[in-house]
Every structure is written in structure tokens, then in C-alpha cells.
Length: 334
Ligand SMILES: [Zn+2]
Image 1 (cartoon, rainbow, N blue to C red):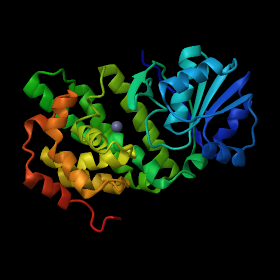
Image 2: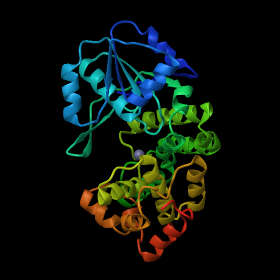
Image 3: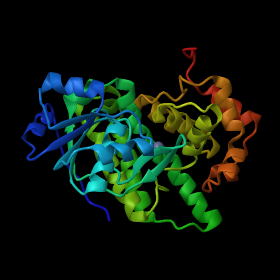
């Protein structure tokens, strides 16, 4: 069942960790831990450096970690997810301190673990205590913090696909939730410049919009309101290249490409992701890889057994692919 998080944000709020009662175990990584120590030297009972999110790794950690009263996740998605895994298994108190806002892991109840290199979701624990330290988050690379806007901006293309699946396929649709989602998209639009500049307002906007999104998706029972064919594009790039990317880079490209396929205010959508600073030309992929990911969308969707979307209904031909590519920023860095 959904539990609302208590979110406290501000500059230097990370200092509150020192006052946690009982035995404290921190799940972190080198960089966020070093930044934390600069701002606020602190020696908790246990500090664990997170290596990866393989299911085996977290299972082993949970078995070996000494008893604790509070588990703290201090860092990016893997640190938050490792803390969530420990707290879920042990039923202990959990405090999450994201050092970056690139993914929604600090707000969701699911834990992303890897089994044979593919992401699986386990667990069910809604984070109830969050500390959002602006100083700490502003120390992370700006482009990674901006990437957090991707799973809010994806509402634009996801809502279109959701409605299409309802009209063509009779999938359940909830107009009231679609309105809540549209409100989030508009809120992102109004704050795009703050997000781009990674100001305190920009950071709080991303966290607040994630909070609202997790709430309505949980109440609806799926991520349909924020996950559409733009994510199929993202998954296909990873599938084709077998490489790992910044999620926001992939979804940014997906929103650009899919809003065109949907004939859905494409110029506005591309402008929104550009204003938020999403790198929608995927700097870590070649133009040919991007072309191939679009050309093979229908095949990939069928093979992977993914949800109904404009990928099923639309016409994906050479002309479409080239128009998407022509809309990417010029002079790519490769
Ligand atoms: Zn996503």
C-alpha cells in the first residue's frame, strides 16, 4: 500500500543524520561519502561501499551486515536501492539521502536488482524519510541531475500511448489520473530553467514531481501514465548495443522520436527536453545505432512482448527515421 514520504529539503540538511538514534548502517559509494565527510564529518556504526546491484551481491550483504536500527542510503540509485533492500528484508527504519536526482529510486517502492545482467524488480517498501540536501546534490554532474527530468517529461508521450491503447485495445484508462499527470508535465514546463540550472527549486521540483508520479502510478496500478513508447526506444537502444547508458539520455531521444511518430506537439516536446537539458542525441551512441533502434522498433516490441503503443499503430519508414535524425542537434561530439 502507498505510503507518503516525509521529505525535508535544504542546504546542509544532511547534518541531521548525525542525530539518528541507535546503530546506523550507511549504504554509499566513494564520491558521495567523501562529499558528505567534507560537509559534515560523521562516523556511523557501519559504512558499506555499494559495488553493484546484482541480486547475489545484495543477498550476501544482507546476510553479513551486522544488526542495525537504521539503514541510510546515501548516494545515487544503487545506494538508495541497496538501503531499500536491507530495510525491506529486516523491517528496520530507513532514511534516504539522494546525492543526485537522476532516477526515481528514492521515491519508489520497488528495488531494481540485476539477475544475469537484466534488471528485475523485487521488494515492496515505500521510502518514508527523505533528506534532500541541495549542497550535496549540486556537487554531482549537472547533466546527471538534469537527466532526472526524463521520467516526468515522458508523461507527454506516455499519455498519448495510454489513450491509444484504451481506444484501440480497450485497456483501462483513468481520465482523472491523466489530468494529474498532465499537471506534473506542466509543472516541469514552468520550471524547466530551474531544472537546467540545478537550482534548489529545480531539485525540489524533480523530487516533488517524482513523489506525485509514484503516488498516482501506484494508485492506478501501473506506470502507464508515465511510461510509453519513448521507453521502448530506450530499451531497444540498450538491447541492440548491449551497453549501459544514462537513462535520461535514452528517454530524451525517445520522447523526441515518439512525439513525432504520434504527431503529438513534437516541436514543443523536443523544446521541453532541450530546455531541461536532456541530451536527446544520446552522446554515448552513434547515429547509426540510433537509426537502427528506430528502424527495428516494431520487431523489438513484438519480440520483447511489450505494451501496446504508437509503435504498433504508427508507420515507421525511412522517411520517418530520417526526419527524427534531422531534428537532432547539429555537430554531435563524435
Ligand atoms: Zn524511465
